[in-house]
Image (cartoon, rainbow, N blue to C red):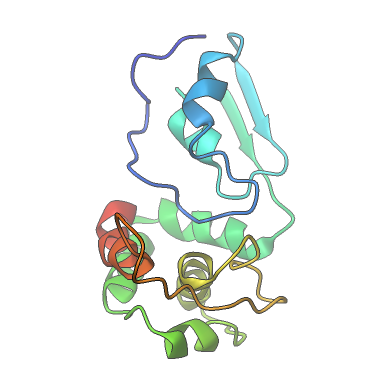
Length: 158
């Protein structure tokens, strides 16, 4: 099925995710057959699901409860706004990144910590609370830096 415009216009993925299909999503969507049901059993950041036209029935699932919890927060306008506000107030800082590995019982704060680990962590396991990765601190590359990307993230999430 060829798509002229995404049904849900997004300018960036919800998370930096190992195996994420953000850049491949348009190509994948263009090569999908017509369908009424769409299932993402190992959805992660759901880059294809969130960029494709809606199907009659869509199923999102992932074994990682934190990422499922993030999407629960995003579907509630009040909690999503609170998450965006907290992220806006979160500096791009090594201490924030390290603190994001601590366990938490508040769903919105858990989602914030997942996003911090995902975007501020280096490598594919940045989102993983069980595997601490390094802090992404590149400031010398051409184009945007991780800190610049982080500055723009909260507004694009809401």
